[in-house]
Length: 338
Image (cartoon, rainbow, N blue to C red; front, side, top):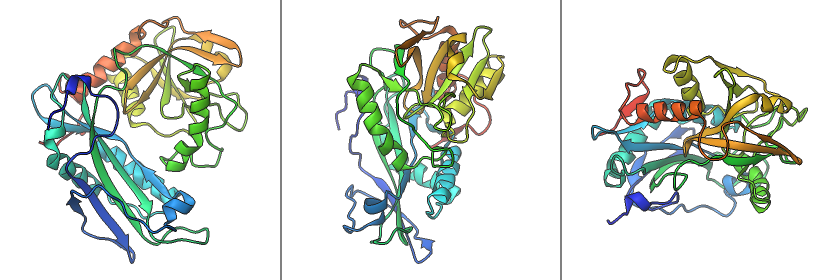
């Protein structure tokens, strides 16, 4: 196995083992690790007909002292349970989820990049309806799987501020599935992101679909803002996916940096009052935003388009320092694997 860790992109690379467990007759089997990367399904499988599928995203990495760890996997397990309940899928137990993550990472330990390379081992747990379904109803059988892939940093050449647009599309309905990590949410966002890229924007800043006046999130990340007096604010909405990275950043802002941190509704017409803006998620941790374009009206943040703002950079450095073992972590945040 020869991998150029420092020049690794963010894409799929097959590793040696993956985890598989099947749900049938009302129970999960014992699960197993396998080298077979193929999924064989009936042509009428529930996932293919009615998009009954969900997933999680997390990472394993080597810390400064050489340990292999992952970050807050219990929250990924809990979020998948919430998603499964909303999609009428069986829940995979939290303890089994965490043990499966540990097992598959241990079996692919040689694919965990070295400390300092900027690369990590991406972990993708997912579940789908697997038996034939014709009428519109939940499947009776399901498969839970985890695969891994070594990935490079999400942004090559450092973190540069990006440009968002306010689109003419909605991400989630008020009583829909925006608050869970369902595959169908991402399918719905694909046309909007392709359209944004064609017009020269990096991502979409979605507004609430009921009034189209309040900021929600982008197609794949939550949003944070920083006020002129260094208060960290994030949008509050029942249709936003509860990001584990965002939750962790808000804790870091308050307890490590001594800043005020608040979750509240944010109107699109007030974003010009903020000095910094950033997207947050597993892949990039924090991605600074330099500009938002709302149907021709441009909002440029004082932090600019050249580099992250001061508070954004401090948040990024502190959270990644915790993840990499350079800064002491709150109890329960780091799960040691090897």
